[in-house]
Image (cartoon, rainbow, N blue to C red; front, side, top):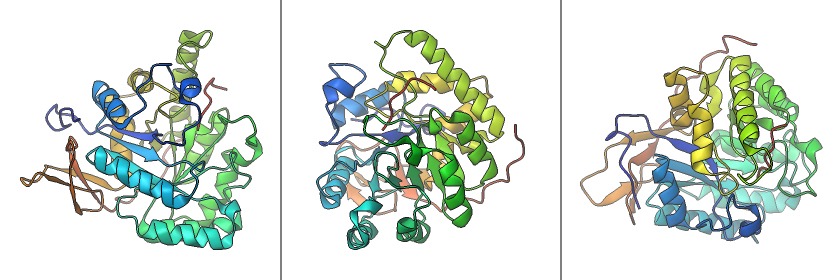
Length: 336
């Protein structure tokens, strides 16, 4: 279940900052990028290997029957992938103060988590909702980035007003010691997302879920349009180090998503950073050689059994201070 390590091929690790693999994913035959998609841990790992992706953030879903079940699923995926699929928890502030507090207590006990994802738009709340204060306090305490759904929703009943990048500006100012990721580049508000990234030194964005399936009309033209919009956003912000490659698999093929980054008119160093180096720093992941013992280290440095050892072991590393911004200047996806 493993491919060659990044060090073996002489490159930085590649990290997909946005995938979903869950028993509660909606209608995989309708929403997957192809009908015969192998929506399993081995299927995803094989696709990662083909695109030379070393690790991926497996984002849990708010559709799970309970947060206990979602967290348990994340642990299973982490272990069965040999540590290559890193769990990201989720919290719903509309569930009530007591339920949020209970969720956060459970999250505190999870050793493998690398982030927390919130779903404004799918759920009726703004990122600056005061009910989220305990979540942001936990993020600061545990040094966990907050991923925020932004823009278009896969579900037509979602409310876009809650998912605009401009709504993140207030909370990014209020919580300067918390790192935020605008998922999906804020699509369709990509220029707005670039401005929020430029203005706030603690805000990042990912490139996931910007395309429909290959069977979509004018897909080739949409692909080029998407590449151009990502490139313009990077140039407008002047901060390629704040952009993260992501696919939104199973909505988008990994080869297509990585290809968008590989074809950007940026330096090879910036493209390599977007494809994994930036995520490695943001999520505090430090690669190191696998130990002699046939076990791997989880992102927090704990030794865990390894079923199909990952291409590299990981441990959490406090991110280094980030640089100050130094320059300024709808795609067709249905994202999750």
